Length: 267
Image 1: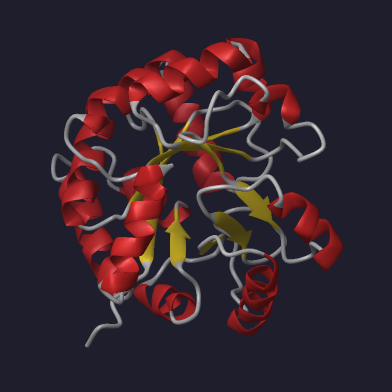
Image 2: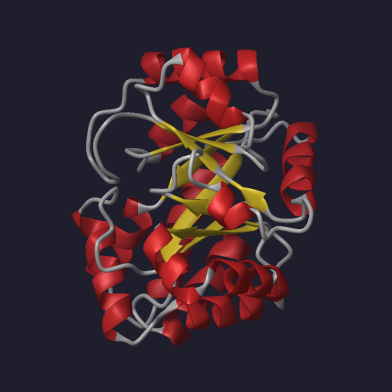
């Protein structure tokens, strides 16, 4: 959690916003996945959101669904993602957030997951389908505040519900920009701005916006008022479209640099 806090303080001082990059771990295979992530870290992502592949990713669109399928086909599971996390930690100090659904965590063992995630160097977890009313089942095993539970807020979340969710949030808030799944089109910045202001009235954690952000223009628009932007499907689409190319990591790196540039407001 300290890495997350320090990263947002650092970015604020530099008049930059966070570029949060999502990738499904192990896609297209473990070796290439590490090479891609290494290049992404070198090229400017501020926070890594590392997806644990799942067979039924209901919040994700077809691009990320296919990335999960490719990863699962390579035999990737939680244990291997945690090994990958540990390896990533040897080359970067940026915050690493594990992205998952609750079923894999439950099958793995919630207490075991927490211990091994912390040991691997992860800074937190985002569990897409775990509502706050049920999250004590997992967080009761957490010994301190060094591991963050990243909370999701939807554009349809009313203020009373939002305040209840924010009580147990830490690290940063992930604001879903719209109804639908990841990778879907249609970004209404005015609605996202309104929701961001509402969150800030109830919470002082950084607000990062995801879903539907794919271009530098999208990034610039949302970063003008949010604390960070999350890009996932756009990176995974590049992997899918260039999967056999030896310069795949460099292709992803170019996209990272373009999007990171759009988060800088110091000039």
